[in-house]
Length: 522
Image (cartoon, rainbow, N blue to C red; front, side, top):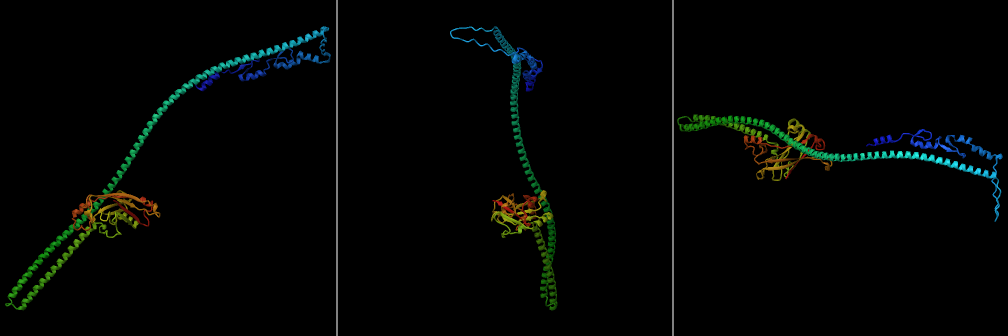
């Protein structure tokens, strides 16, 4: 049972109005008590003790007309002066002498006593009536109190029932709340477990995404390397085709020169035969000196000798010309082969300002703006000086494409480190595995605030024989064209990438100078 219902039941039980027992006017219970103190219909005894009971509202009128008021007026007037009480008889010792008392005085005295008794009786009667009235009032009040007590008890019983119902409902609600709370806790635990599993799934998804992104970057690098290799192979194929054509032309020229030389040799042989014939003829002439005049023999001999010398000089000049042409062709052929090699192969490690032999190279790149423009226009590749991992170690060189390669072209700086032919390769261990750290140096005024960019690169080569032909400067004359082709096709490179946007964040380019540092991790 709700509190509103209890209040409604209490309002239904509570009496609205109660009538006055004297004037029959209806009043509320709280106002009825105040009305009884002032009600004009209540009977009161005459204040002059005349024995009359009058209503309170007529008391003033009765006092004015009360006979007791007239009697008190008569007693107070001089014509109606009250006689004094008779003096008691004198008492004498040892004798009794009754005094004679007048009868009227006794009667008047008795009347006075009777009157006083009547007044007392009337007062007692009025007092008794007043008490009976008060008893009636008390009885009515007791009835009202009893009714109120009954109403209060009924209300209390209803309230107790309502409280019991509310307690039962509260207990049910508490049990339901506990049940719902346990369900909520279970749901919260399930939600937390689901959240944990979701977080784990998200972490696994993030890790898989990172792994996929890493694989994608590796794949892009591989694709870039593949594209670069394809471009390099295409360019090398064009160069090789040009070299082949040049070699074929040189072979044709050599064959022509050989044919000319053979022809000249045949002519020289003929000239030698002619000289032999001339010598034989001279002998014959000498033998037949006696038969011919001496002047004729000498003239013929001089003419033949002059012709032979002229022909020999001509053949010698032709042979010299062919030899010069052959040397020029050979020189141009070797020059073309040397142009395929990198300019770095002609740099010697004997100059300490060009490289190092401790696995450390600090490369200064001047005129960065002009070199970047050249890289954008002509795809120029910068090559560092040669350096070694140790004094008698592997020989390395670095390459930088300022404008990038492949998909990173125009957005990144790409760099790589390559193993080249060294003088101590036969004494070194193969296969070769090297780890190189490439550092783009920051150039702030406060060196403690430098923010260098560090990248790592792994190098591997199975054997010293598997190297590029253009890395070898001393053996290129003994290399065949097929070996050059195979070595170029087997060329492998790895790169690191530095975004162009990061160059503007710090002072990596200062005074148009950039520094790249290469550290071989021993």
